[in-house]
Length: 316
Ligand code: A3P
Image 1 (cartoon, helix red, strand yellow):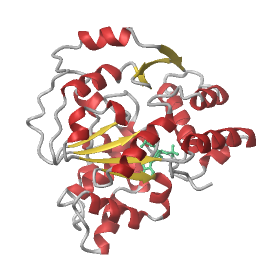
Image 2 (tube, rainbow, N blue to C red):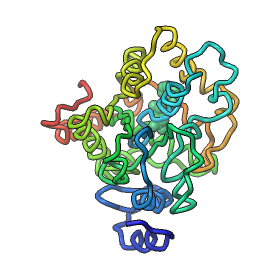
Image 3 (cartoon, rainbow, N blue to C red):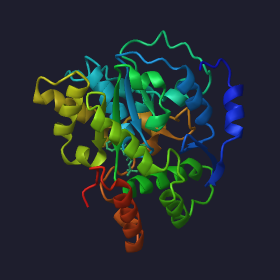
Image 4 (tube, helix red, strand yellow):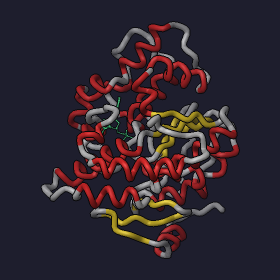
């Protein structure tokens, strides 16, 4: 179905189950919770977007390390990304969000049928929609999909910090940690239920490894060289020299990106959040600074139950 205006999507949205998620509304579309300002764009993209065979999609639930890959993938795909001269590195002037724009927010939020013909190939997009809600042509064309996920405990902690940063600058109280945690465990979470989001891409990546490359934030932290080499091969841009891998990793490192002027002072035009909030601690196990034993036990148990028999775990 191709739709030329938003009225169909707003009508549909008005009929969906809705819950409060801190200070926002979440709508349940096709089994997943979506923020109201993401949803019409996601629906329009599903109806109208036509993938090309050489497109690259970065997919994820929120706060799983997407920003790292929003920097790495464009750098791998850019013929100059692995060269010595840093002066024309796009990351110097652009937040990673701009180098791999969101399909639903960057294109289909403002216009349900945007003209994408001006975009040079290969086009790079990112999205938080679950596998089931991807535009059909993304699934059926030869375009590539990279998925990144992370230990749900760290994902939750990161999203709690990010949400509070979104409203923190407006001087409001943070979301009580326990309430946010319960909501996450109940699957009520932007792009949630988290585990179902992960499983959708995981199962498809098992069936079609040439189509979907499944990554974990923890693996990237443990062996960034090895992981980025495999990613570059998947993208059809293998590295020739070790120095090239090091160059890409250095350009996209948290320390470097965090300290670049563009990321310290700019504002994300799609969410209105300061660019700096996309870069925080970037460690594995930050949950230890926030969780009680009981919280850890409950979420680990939920994860083990959800992932049972899937072959997927986070190594605990
Ligand atoms: P923390 O909040 O745990 O620090 P996303 O990009 O999906 O929104 O996820 C954000 C998380 O990725 C944050 O985690 C952030 O610090 C981390 N991150 C952002 N850029 C990174 C980079 N270049 N290297 C490693 N981690 C990064």
